[in-house]
Length: 341
Image (cartoon, rainbow, N blue to C red; front, side, top):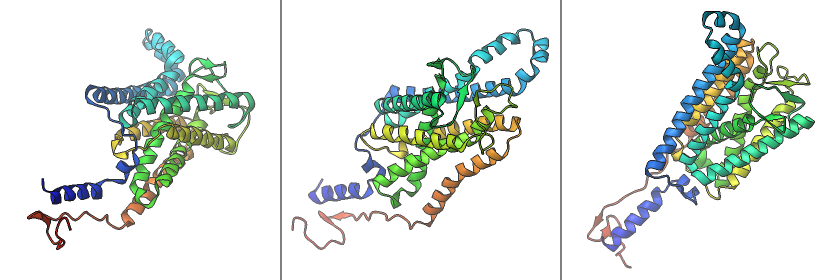
């Protein structure tokens, strides 16, 4: 390679480096069998997560209300019924956490995923324990016995798992949305926007989940409120607490990574399917108790930032392409300056 060719190759690489590549000061690479294992665990966990939610919906919406008829037609169904009552509420959350942890390893590596998991679990568990003990930051409420073993006899161990898997899935979704308009933001602006938007997605999910899970007409209630709030029985304070908790663990989790994230590494369909299936699960419960407004509100608020980002992206001027000129006789065509001058 001539000196001019070397300069040209270097210049071309510099001009075509993406913003997101420049962001990631600590690249994470998962090679060979490890990458394959992470992908299989992520997709397998996602399928199991969805199947467990279908199982839970079938139990809540059909089996429990018609248990006498179900057992009369199939006496062996009592074993499935007992399993569902004891483990059904926790199972889909465990599979969701497995799926998202594996997805995190695919995107940011094992160390970063583990740090995010620990911070999300501990911070959300602390918020829930304080909340069930004092009423801050969510309001006065208590969990029932349908979601698994309770930490300090207050909070089911699965609840912080759901904060983790929906939090990380929401963060990745937010990063993809911000990626669409990232050219208009600084590096810090992208990170702050991603954290705020990810927290927004978590709160929007709860807009349809919380009113249904605690509704008096649901055959089994997963938590009970001691106060009557303005949003379908939920106190507004609950959503402020959700937003604060999500922002806190996302921000600290992101800071612990000591480097950026490359959005092109995110397997787009995984966070979309995980987040979307949890919306559908909550929507099914909401419809069963006659709550359709939270569903419409939730879907609208999820779609809104995507539409805004797409509109901004479409209105942006086309990106400038690098000009690559051929090298003729050791000199770039069109350049009259002798090489080495």
